[in-house]
Length: 382
Image 1 (cartoon, rainbow, N blue to C red):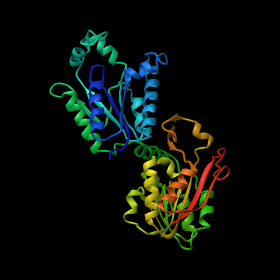
Image 2 (cartoon, rainbow, N blue to C red):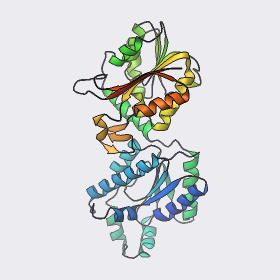
Image 3 (cartoon, rainbow, N blue to C red):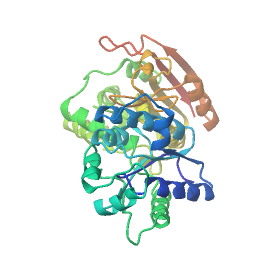
Image 4 (tube, one colour):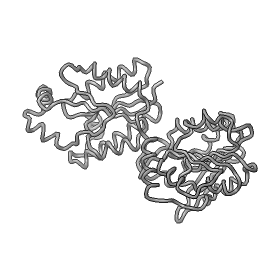
């Protein structure tokens, strides 16, 4: 099975973006992948009159195109986007905010570009005019895949290479990586709030005595260390190495350990191991599929009668209306966030086998300075 994602095929005018993308679309569909093609020229016609040709206009248009592609991919469609849009700002934004984002740069020398462009009406007639047009853009840095699309490399060969690479290497970056990058930067510069969260103090009242606790997305360790102070044995995990380094630099506790890992890296070694799994706000940095894996792995890691505690920002929170739209539940505002529908989360938990004992959506539960988010709190039992 191929994960839905965004495959951005780019290169300068004449590099073969459209030809390669059409063949790639056929290959994906032929192999049972639900896929669509968004061509940059067609998109500009659809949005006719919205943007001019300044660098600023082109960047804004590119982000709109990528947002549209992301929105479609979030609903199970692999989207091929054939467009130049080669700006460092755009590529960085896409890598940090789109799930399973895959960039392909078609590299073609200027003399070959010119020969191809001369065969098109209203195209470039000299190297100078071609270079002048291309100077608007940035040569793509660190694409997922780079192909020299000329000489012996035909559009069929190029498309086949993309197809093989894409379907054989599904984990191509996207939000999980970008979340790690964001939080590494955050915890490298800040220590965060030192005292335990209100949710930790509320949840701990329901822990069994001397519980074996796993905190997922432990951040600076404030809640893990609180659980330790209450007599529990705690393992804190986070995908941010900077966060884990910060945790490990604090006063060591014999009953608490911290590890740079996610749930996938833990569950096979810790089946039926924990009395409690606790996750405050970590689910926001997970795409829908990763979050589903987290819930399923949590069930497998809990002992019979073990409890799962989750706190997260609701889809009804006013902050949901900020930022750029990536999907019906995902936004990019400073960094990637996914907002949670309480009813859908409850249904997912019950389908896995959990019994939901408490589920609430309210303000006043996670107040921090001037921020009073509308949050969902759930605890459930295996």
